[in-house]
Image 1 (spheres, rainbow, N blue to C red):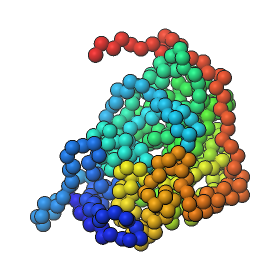
Image 2: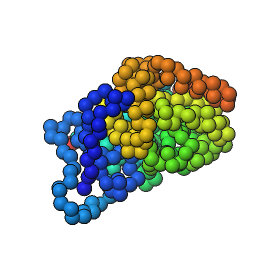
Image 3: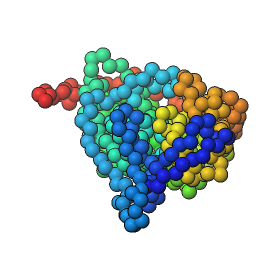
Length: 379
């Protein structure tokens, strides 16, 4: 069963026609970030759950996490974005059970014929052959090493990593080949691999960042329902630093009038936990994210929804999202400049303005050919 809400036009919030959203019952989506599961944008038919009009009580089962294997053909994804400090990345999983409502990777589920809403956090795909593919791609004659980013799309340490251990296998290959890597995560599960990370650190091959968006566990629970609590993330920072792993904190995303008031407190806590640097990213709302975030905001923070949305548009030239290089991660305008200046001053005050460590590429050794050769595929 679902409930359909119609939002009246608010001149201070939306400059669009009123939108109807079908919210699934709270009990059915408990522990999930999105409130809806609207059909992906590439589908010919749009499906929506509605009340059948009868007063008979119906109990639909809670959304369960479904996991399917994806037989990937390649594992290293290339990019040419000037906004990020790497040109290649690895995503061990598709979808993410953390359920962060703002996740900019949500729209990619539409390419699978699934919803960027609840499907994204409940219908997950694991790449069990990721390490094997990585070893073979690194063995190619023309391959040249450069830092690989992991955690740039979906979180490599989301809950299913506990049993599938794809990330640990990938790290083992990177250690074997002495290949540089950077990791961003919201999960304290990363400390499980501190042995491999410490070995990479001794060779100057690793940089890690824990994403901390709030110190309020109740707020984080609403916005990032299945990610580690803020306390555990900061404890992971401490553990990694004690092991000699270069580690920083990402305040990502900062959302105006929602969590940006915590900038100074987040950076102070990061400093106390041993973080060496700090960076931030402003909220982005491409494609389906704008509606998912609006629905979430109006359900959880109806008293400030209009103000938050107004500031977001001010930061993006009057639009929900500006995809232009150089502006999409920070925004522009008065509010964006104020937020960036506060962050810069707090980072300097707490000694977190050191640059990320330079990673070595000169140690790289190609995998053994006997373990990197493709099997003949007759399919």
